[in-house]
Amino acid sequence: MANRIPRVPVREQEPKVRATNFEEVCYGYNVEEAQLEASRCLNCRNPRCVAACPVSVKIPEFIAKVAEGDFSAAASVIAQDSSLPAICGRVCPQETQCEGSCILGIKSEPVAIGKLERFVADWSRQNGGPAPEAVPSNGHRIAVIGSGPAGLACASDLAKLGYEVTIFEALHRAGGVLVYGIPEFRLPKDEVVEAEINAVKALGVKIETNVVAGRTVKIDDLLDGEGFDAVFVGSGAGLPKFMGIPGENLNGVCSANEFLTRNNLMKAYRNDYMTPIHAGKKVVVVGGGNVAMDAARTALRLGAETTIVYRRTENELPARREEVHHAKEEGIQFAMLTNPVEILGDEKGWVRAVRCIRMELGEPDESGRRSPVAVPGSEFEIETETVIMSLGTSPNPLIARTTAGLETNRRGCLVADENGATTREGVFAGGDAVTGAATVILAMGAGRKAAAAIHEYVQSKKA
Image 1 (cartoon, rainbow, N blue to C red):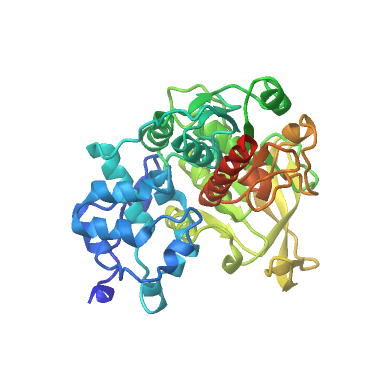
Image 2 (cartoon, rainbow, N blue to C red; image 1 turned 90 degrees about the vertical axis):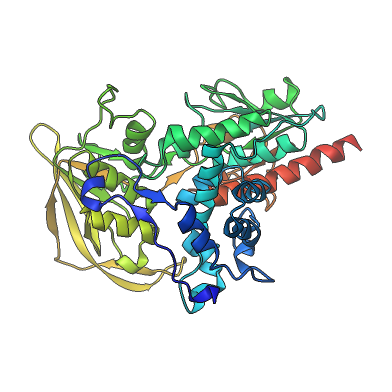
């Protein structure tokens, strides 16, 4: 029976080899592996995996096409709901969403939905699969702020409905967090990200880079003076948080956002780019999320002995299990139940160590995780040259400050309803700009919901 076939393992670079390069860790499935894995799917009558997917990809349907060997048809099925399948197949937390809901996972291993999605997208790109086409204009114009996953998903859906969509991107390259935040060894930029952005552009979407919303252009002007019918804000959450402990102003302390942006977007890891980046021989990364794993694994590849410091236990790490597993394989050290209290410097103002305190878990906090409590008298030092703070991010306040009637909550996130409508008529928002830092696929889901709401809004104005 199909459910007795063991899950097909995915081929990867050897840990000792990949820890010295920035090439993609996972090789993905070949044709035979993909078809064998696809044959495990039970094609459930009421597929829980689809309900657990934020963009509602028709998972059993595309997997059935993979099992048949009709990869072009599988790509067409996915394209109905996802504009970034090669990206999602690589970076989505499938284990807590589609795969986490797979019925096979109850007694066995769930179907490798993410790896199959990646296979289909890669096959389509490499073999001339179904190409997106622009549809005739319906005469309405929509502005999208930010070219990250929320903005791209929103723009794609609107373009398919005939809207003339222009994306305004603050950086010099489109992609948002996909290009500045996620390392090359997890998500190749030219081969994968650029190709999927080009597919969005093929729908007729225009992308203008080096445009800072709130400075270069204001939302009020887009609506009132430039003829846009609505605006979607998918500007993400790129403002890093720090601990507020002594020593954070020393040389050698930076945010994970800056560290990863220099390495990924500005390609500091390449010898043919003159981008300054500091790692040194020893690095401490503070935090336990996916960004912390990315920063630590990047520092390791830059030649540093790297330690992740986290104030809870491994069971509470918010990072994907796969990323934690890869980090351990590559030689990243983990200091659990540990919290920095001070960063110590030398006589020249550079980091020399982090003073930490041991923690223990107390009662659960608002999120349900047990709150860490300091153990008195347990301070100790970790020698290091660099401290990378990976404590989360919040939205940049510039857009809200320069747009009339646009409200934010106490965390600085834009206030929007479940469909993305903000407190300013004609302005919609989604993704990290509304929720704070989250995942690529959740941002895409928010972008799709907002696109549907924008369509309804524009059509209602016509009536």
